[in-house]
Amino acid sequence: MARNAPTIDAYGDGGFRLAGARHDGSVLIVRDEPHSWGVKAMADLSLADFAPVIEAGAADVEFVLLGTGARNALPSREIREGLRAAGMGLEFMDTAAAAKLYNLLTSEGRRLAAALIAV
Image (tube, rainbow, N blue to C red; front, side):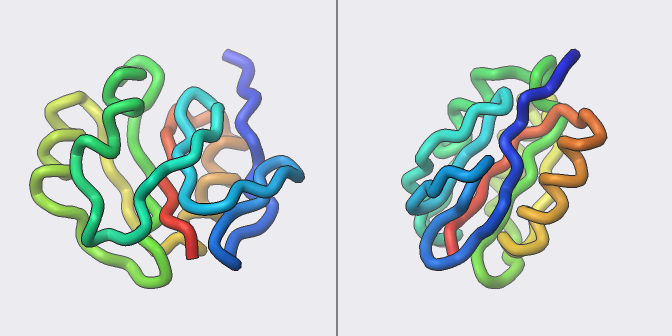
């Protein structure tokens, strides 16, 4: 399947530059489409924030790449178990590392969603 995933050109200053366009705040990329994501910090994150990813389904999303902000942090058990129950894996790391890995994985054609908390 041909991919049209946006590249993450830059991050920081409270947002991202995706394929040349500035996106303020956190971003959720599902089915290669970026969406504003209201999450500001890991402490605010719940399984409900992943509803668009779960709705996309495991056929479109093999795993979620979660950028946890300035520092790596363990997502709650609710999130880990909820994504597993939906048939999706979860990889999490600080947002800087996640942005770089996202570009690499999408260039390889991997089916992933990116949930990136702005720094």
